Image 1: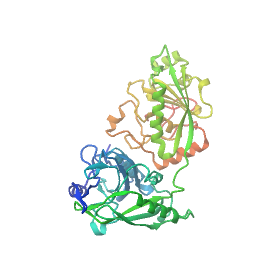
Image 2: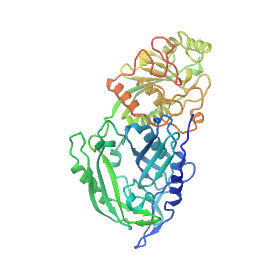
Image 3: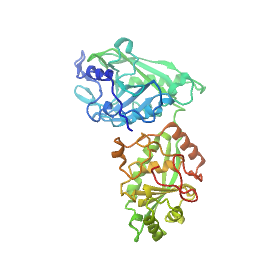
Image 4: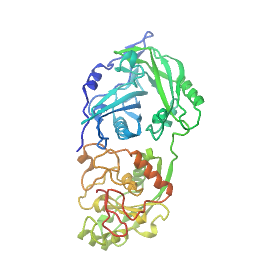
Length: 471
């Protein structure tokens, strides 16, 4: 059962004490920092407790950054956590990605800024969340209810390194390498937003053997290239240090693995269910969206070609589905596998065979590296969810179904409106285990062709043919 996170008293007190108005500096400039928004799209409203969280009593600290646009929308959220708490990191980044903030302003004009946030969970029977608009580095002087200085991103050129931080999750590293942090830099930002004293605070070479002093100094010097919203305490701008942390600028990025996919769009004069309505442009857009979901795994699906082709064994398909709309009867898999023309299949790669309606939304032919993907479920006529393409590609990488209504796009669904049933937005994440398994399969260069379907499903057809999306 979905459990919404309970916001504790500390978070409520925090909202009432955060700066709410502009403050004048000595030269007459007014500054307003970006703040947590209100309403249904606020970060507080969007945060949920992950269903797959570890058991026991524990605290989860998440150090986060996000770009807040002039209209209050957010982009490029990144959070830092140890691997044990990956599910919380995924949830925090999901919530941040769609949150609406109160934008920062200079002299009343909205500006784009980089915002520091601390998101914490205190878990026992429930996991109440609490938020601070800082990373806690200045807590000794200002407590926790302050707003850290915010770099003003006048264009996209100043903070080029931000996207190079990439995945902030910890991997199997030592205590001095938590989250892959390689160095911490800082600068003094006075109450007028003037920067001085850029410096390198810490360098963590860890076990990589690389030296980061030169990279750290370049990053510190880059702080000279920005304007700043000063730090705020009790609604007033104050002198405060801005701290920033960087991952390995040379080794943090995963190598992108590009995998070829051929799409067959079927048509049929005899069986409406086999007559796909998708256009080439719609298919290309669906791959853009699927690739965005797969981006954390650094796996890029390359649309090798789109082939419009007539379905084969049409009458056999109709008889099979009339007898058994789930496609699980004896011999059904063999019949369904022959509907997608074999001569049009990509032999060295992955294949999607698109139809209007498929048994249980999708039907898998693992030995062939192929999936029949429906625009809807043939029995219920419910449309496949937005993440269906990313989901079925995951199965062809050997990934099994995740628990229903979880935050990963590998969550199971079948014969029902996914978003309505789960009451939460489109899932957007992969767990670290899923990423590892998918990349291991990608490195082989072929689809998952084990004669048994991925964990969490059972094949009732012959020859290793799989069932639909749910399970």
